[in-house]
Image 1: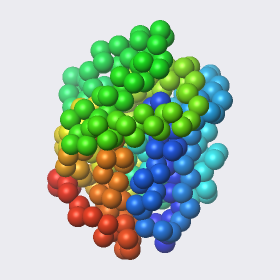
Image 2 (image 1 turned 90 degrees about the vertical axis):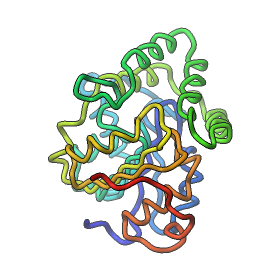
Image 3 (image 1 turned 120 degrees about the vertical axis):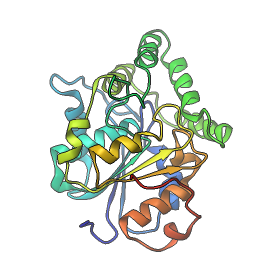
Image 4 (image 1 turned 60 degrees about the horizontal axis):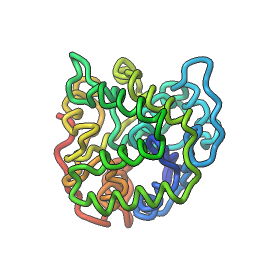
Length: 268
């Protein structure tokens, strides 16, 4: 894996959130390259302009325009989908991918059972029209369900939302559409970018069992399940996530020794 020493990191948050969610993980990572926490379109006070073409490519191009020439891209949940799209659009600019509770397809299909039920996302989309704030709150609750640190993580997510302007409802709807409709499984075999996939062992949105599917789709990927974590291990287990990232990038220092790594096996 050709990754520069002390690489720059591009950090892409999840649906409805903002760049502030990366604070705990950024602090846990070993000091080195600059961190570029980028707000997705319509999030964190950014203006949202609906795309007239491929929405996912438009979101990825928007993030590429704000990113350094070459970096390791970290994407959480929806941010992982955008990071994958950026690697497909500009592979020379993406040194490696770190995908946290992300998946190439978020909804179930006949050949993809380890995913969210399509009806769950449809329910969020319908509720979003009438009550954006309440819909976000329900989504936060799903993200922490099952986590051993559910109450603490939910409090962190709520505090994070309160610290930034509310996301544009149109951007929230567009993000849900990306989660519901996009399937990047065909992209993985030819992606050619080293990747680390981190799952929460108790995640109810992106089951950790996706690692078994990735072993077929992306056999060179490194996959790990973080014990006790739900959908937001960057908040509930930042030291463990940082240690996994440091090991993947071949770095030593504080992040590599911050905490014992509690996880499942790599992709078989």
